[in-house]
Length: 262
Image 1 (cartoon, rainbow, N blue to C red):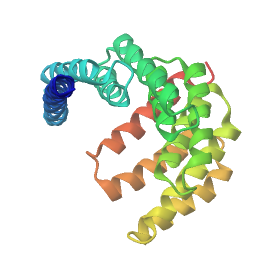
Image 2: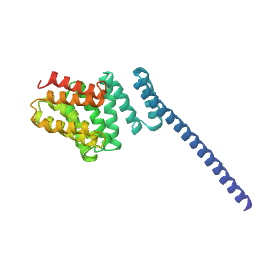
Image 3: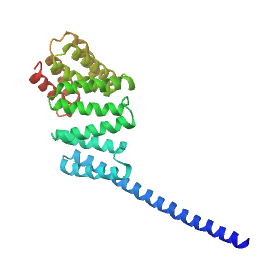
Image 4: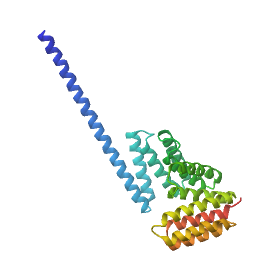
């Protein structure tokens, strides 16, 4: 009997030692994985710094390294992978590498749909990003469809005064003007201007009043050119002529003039 108990105790001892070894190995693996992820996040931050400095080649390399680490640690269909794919896609789009950008935007969209669902604001963000890419490529019908989808999601999930809704309305209006849907486009611009005016009212009543007046006057415009010219003048007074928002408005106006009704 004593021999049997000793034998049993020895078996329990071996099992205990093995379990400690497994736990230790798991902890070491977990620590290693966390360290790799910390490195990936550091690479993301460094990539952003390089983007801000105009070092796009370095930023691309850093994002690719981060993406590879996240795929290895978290799996190829994790949200972190989707976010990094999206950031890299933005970099490619800004540098006119449209096919590479499209592939990454679609990948990010697929992952977000699978994890978050197709009614989530993050899914809407990816739709809008892909829509902007199509707009840049002059694929206006596809751009309109995706901007419409992102608008619907955002209006159902975000505050009515969200700046994101204002921007979405502005982007969709740009496409509608080009497609000749002036009535819908002016309504969207009025919505965008009204939201921005209300958000600015507590801090800059002067600009807010100008935007509100422009929103009301837009009911009487027969073409978008006067609307954009007045909007750009207000933006320049408020932001300065070198602000990126001015460049975006000028680019929109230029594209509308070039492709409108074609």
